[in-house]
Image 1 (cartoon, rainbow, N blue to C red):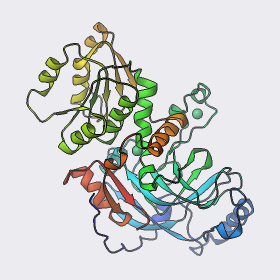
Image 2: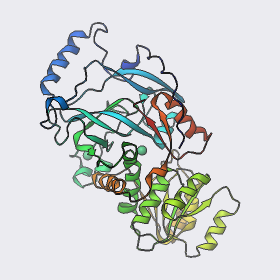
Image 3: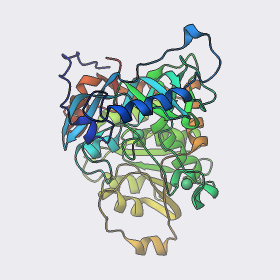
Image 4: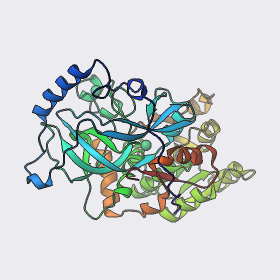
Amino acid sequence: MLRPRRKRRAAPGRGGTRRALGLPGRRGSGGRRDGHQGRRLRRAERVRPCDPVPASARERLPQEIAVRAAVLSATGRIEIREVDRPQLGPDDVLIKTTHAGVCGSDLHAFKGKHPFRKPPVILGHELAGTVVECGGDARGFSPGDRVTVMPALACGTCRLCRMGRENICLNKRVPGVQGWLGVFAEYAVAKASVTFGIAPATTLELAVLAEPLAVGVHAVTRQAHIEPDGRVLVLGGGTIGILTALAARAAGAGDIVITDLFELNLGLARTLCGATAVHVGREGWEEHLAQGYPDKFDVTFLCSGAPATVGQATRLTRRGGRIVVTGLFLEPVPTDLTTVTLGELEVVGSQIYDHRDFRTALDWIEAGRFDFRKMVTHVFPLDQAQQALEVLANRTEDAVKILLDTSR
Ligand SMILES: [Zn+2]
Ligand SMILES: [Zn+2]
């Protein structure tokens, strides 16, 4: 595992950071002092430790503490700045983060291609850490608890929530937008309802993987309907692709074939779940695969968002088979719908996860269902978030899951 050497801390950011991020100004920053103090008083009345704990176990942060955060200030540019600590709502917990995962969606934002995460924004939604404070209505947690967070908040009242489909809630909130700060920062805030305790034997580093694993769990267990011994094709062997292959293995799939451009990723999929790995840089790989599987695949997962994989999916999935779209395609892709019609292919989307999927993912990590440690190839200190994103963006070196150590 590569652990880049820590660099000197970057200088604190410019004064406009808080306003630009939609945060309140710091105390003493001009004429907002009275209003700010008023908010503090009201808030102080609501705050209590989550569950009765001895006073010695409580930890409180000064309200005005500055928090180091990795801010995407412009496309391709991350700066380490100091921002106000996140505000704690009555049903929130405040978490001192230790690790944050760098995800494909962070990479999209870094490249300026994310549909709604635009600079200036604190990226990151995969985290683990320790609870330091709880709002007055946040039940079930105490300071010192080790936790991870399902970074999606459903409204609970819209038509889709009432249908039990919280993952596609019409009013869903996620970190990085609508006032919920991203987690590439020393502290993060989350509703207690989406916070999950971590078993004592599980490291915080591994618990970060619950989020991407839950994506694979949802795609496989809710959207794919894999029959026992079903033939599964995973197009795109990044973190989500590999974790989807693992979920397919857990679901009882027979042959699992995974494609990618990188030997490291392919080797991991082979090692972790016995998948057959196909390098898409090799000439004629698709014809070769089609010859090896004349009955084609029962279920195909589109995990990379690469336009070429759409045609591969329609050609390599059997009649009556299913194509599950997990990857984010940033532009419309021409699709051979004649093949879909003639073969009655089912094409279904798969969007993040819900509580059950997240619980399953965390259970698997805690139980050591697979050797998830092998997924983490890099851990960068928070100060080197720029380098972490560049490794993923430019593929200057082999990488699968990259974490930020937010305590350094
Ligand atoms: Zn993610
Ligand atoms: Zn809803």
